[in-house]
Length: 227
Image (tube, rainbow, N blue to C red; front, side, top):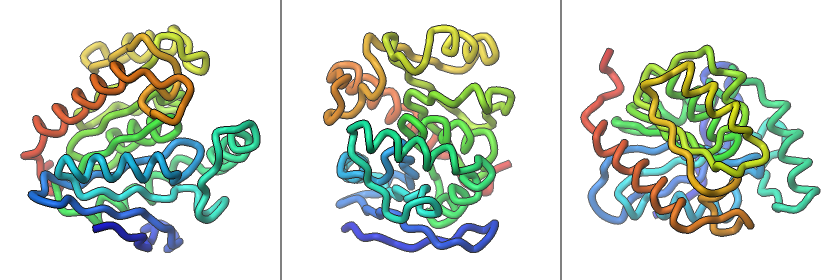
């Protein structure tokens, strides 16, 4: 079953929407799916349905509702410009509060997966939010802004070797700062996990998804009230 639900930030009470999908059969856990700069688009909704089919109760929050309610921008130049403007106008403390509302709304264990801008948000969740059991970050270009915030929950990162927005130096900086953090680099560019993007690489997308699901399965016993 799927629906749009309204959540409220614990910081300021702002109400934002989230696409909610429940698994058709047994529930493995909750999952907060964080969108790219384009908002909650059809591809994000399809990803939510795919994870639900794998047994996860998914919330895909519209984290730019303060900037443009219901944003679902296109992948053209206009959409990129709008999405970047929204992402730059969303402070990380504000994003953290909205993510907390999502984690609280789901029964544990709760996982986080994020793509592009959402990949950085996944790092943020792993570093700051106690109720997160594990997180998977896809091509988080803005991770350097948070690199000094140590992930407190299991986290894996996925990058494309030919991603023009994330140079090899950035990936190496993550590895140098956190040598025990799994950092996977694929023969692909930015957005390789989306079959709607020109840089989509099916093999890389499948492997990254497999690693993400394995991470979630390994950490499914962690409850939100664990220290």
